[in-house]
Length: 306
Image 1 (cartoon, rainbow, N blue to C red):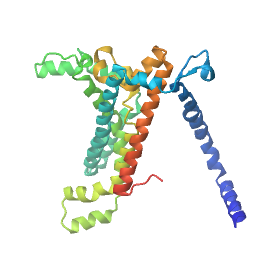
Image 2 (image 1 turned 180 degrees about the vertical axis):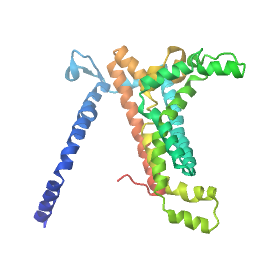
Image 3 (image 1 turned 45 degrees about the vertical axis):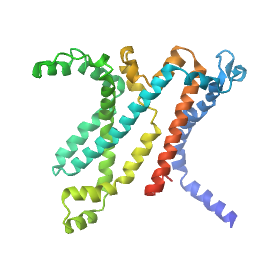
Image 4 (image 1 turned 135 degrees about the horizontal axis):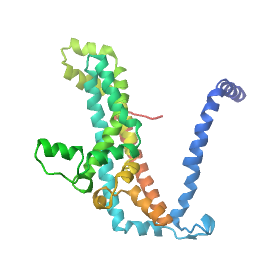
């Protein structure tokens, strides 16, 4: 029986050999850029010296973690990271959800397609391009201040150097960039809802709002759960590329995050071990959040990835 099963598996692998060959580049890419670099985590437990390498650098245990936990800049960056990431996760699900529900009620297909295209366009631009646009729009003499001064007689506001406004700009612009992608995913989930459920709701006298509340939302809950789990996995990824290209020292108090701190310590400050320890801590916290969120979804809604 075992021999028969082995032959069956070999035959199945042979039939799908083209698919496995197509998968090979992705496997190699993931191994080289995601798994092999994990050996470098040993730096978090060493006083790493580039000239000595991994094998000869002094092992210091958890001293690097004790060092970063006592840094005032670490505590500030951790709080900023959590706040920015929390609002990004919530709004990046809530805004596309509302937009997708609104678009689903649109009768004119040309209008729906046009809106989808318009909101999807920012997703394809890099932060290097979008940051330049945002810096021009919110500049002291930019479009926003010109509108405020011309129509509302409000004095120009220094948005880009104000701790009061800059964090909001960071969060709102990230939601704006990614909402098109999530909207398309949620619209796809809505179109897969069984039409018989809507028909039954209409027979029972349900209004459009009741249909959305009791048919559409429960039906797309698995997709919302997937987006939530993926978002929680990056709870401490508050957008390194975005903040790096828009960051300036005057707003460090509210937008300096763990990734930018790691960048300054590791690349600019050559504190490789402390930066590695901070990165490992961030990954461990993200793993905990993913595990907890997955467990809650599994217990409450029987949601499973595998």
